[in-house]
Amino acid sequence: MINPAAGTFRSLKSFNFRLWTAGALVSNIGTWMQRIAQDWLVLTQLTHHDASALGIVIGLQFAPLLLLLPWTGSAADRLDQRKLLMATQAAMGVLALVLGVLTITGVVQLWHVYVLAFLSGSALALDAPVRQTFVAEMVGDEDLPNAVALNSMSFNSAQMIGPAVAGLLIAGVGIGWAFLLNGLSFAAVLISMYFFRRSELRPNPRAHRTAGGFLEGLRYVWKRPDLGAILLMLFLIGTFGFNFPIFISTMAVNVFHTDARGFGLLSSLMAVGTLAGSLFAASRMKPSMSSLLAGAAVFGLGCGLAALAPGYWWFAAALMIIGAAALTFVNGTNSMMQLSTEPAMRGRVMALRVSIALGGTPIGAPIVGWVANHFGPRWSLALGAGAAFTAALVAAYVLARRKEPRFAQ
Image (cartoon, rainbow, N blue to C red; front, side, top):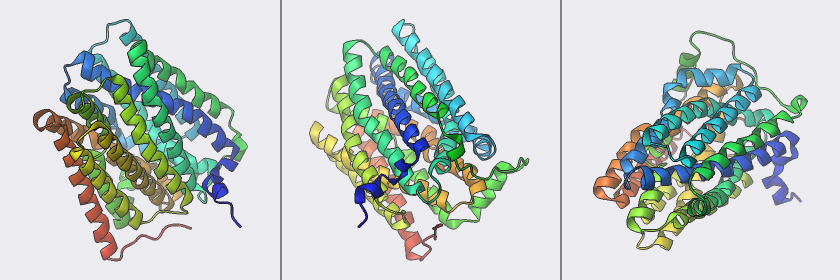
C-alpha cells in the first residue's frame, strides 16, 4: 500500500530539492517580514493611511515583470539557471539591506521606497521565471506538480511566521530591522545553491539565441487556446484579486483600527489557508481546468465574505478561505502550463505567465487603492470578487466547449 505522506512529500527525495526547500524557507520568512514592514511604513509613517501611495509602491514593484518581459523569458531559456538565480537573489538581498539602513537612520522618504521597489521588481522579473522552471531541473517532470506544491507550502509556512515576527519587530524595535533581517535571509538560498550536487541536476534543453526569441514565445502561446484561457484567468485574478497588501492593510487600519501586531496576525492567519491549499495540491497527481474553475470560484466567494465581514475574526476566517483558493488556483496554472509546454520554451512561457499574473498589478493596484480610498476597503474586495467570478466563467466556457487540455504524462 502506498504511504500517502510519502506521496505528498515525494519530491524531497531529491537532495538538491531538500537543500533548496530549507534555504527558501528562511528567505521566504524574511520576504514576508519585509512585505508587512513595507506596507506599514508607507501607510503609517510616510503617508497618512494613503492606500493610493501603497498601490503605487506595489505597482512599481511588479511593473518590471511587464517591462522586461522580452528579455526575462529568453534569459531563463538560454542562461545557466543556477547562476542566474544566485545573481538575482543576491541583488534582492542588497536592496533590502539598503532600505533597512535608510529606515533605521531615519532618512527614508516615500520616493526611496518607490525607487527600491522598482529595482527589487526588476530583479524579481529575472528571478521568477527561472525559479519556476528550475524546479523541473531539480526533480524532473514526473514530480513537478508535487514540487511546485511543496514550494508553495514552504512559502506559505513562511507567511505564517514572517508577518507575525514583523509585527513584533515593528512594535518592539522598529520597522527597519525587518528589512535588515530580510536582506540577511537571502544568504540561506545562496548557501544552499552553492552546495548543490550539480551532477544530479536535470537541465532542460537550452534554447538557441535568436533575434525573435520573445516573439517566438508569443506565437507559441497564440497557437495554444488552452494556454490563452489560463493566462486570461490569471490576468483577471492577478490584476484585481491578488492585491492582498491593500486589502489586508486598509481593512486592518481603516475598518478594524488594529495595531501592527493585529495587522501581521491577519497575514499569518491567511497563511493557514494557503498552507492547507498547499497540502491538498501536493497530494494531487496533476491539476485540471476543473480545479482552476473551483479555485477561482472559491476565491471570489472568499473575497465576497471578507468584504461583508462584520468583525476582525470573521475577516480573518474569510482570509483563510481566500488563501486556500488562491494557492489551488496559482499552483494549478503553474503545473499545467509547464507540463504542457516544450522544455525549450518553458522559460518564455513561464515569463508570460508571471508577467500576466503579477504584471497586471501596476494596473490593478492603483485602481484597487483608489477604490479603497474613495469608496472604502470593502468595495476594493468586492472588485476582487467580481474579477474572480469572471475568471471562473472563463474556465466554465472552456469546459463547456470540451476543450479540456491534455497534459504530458
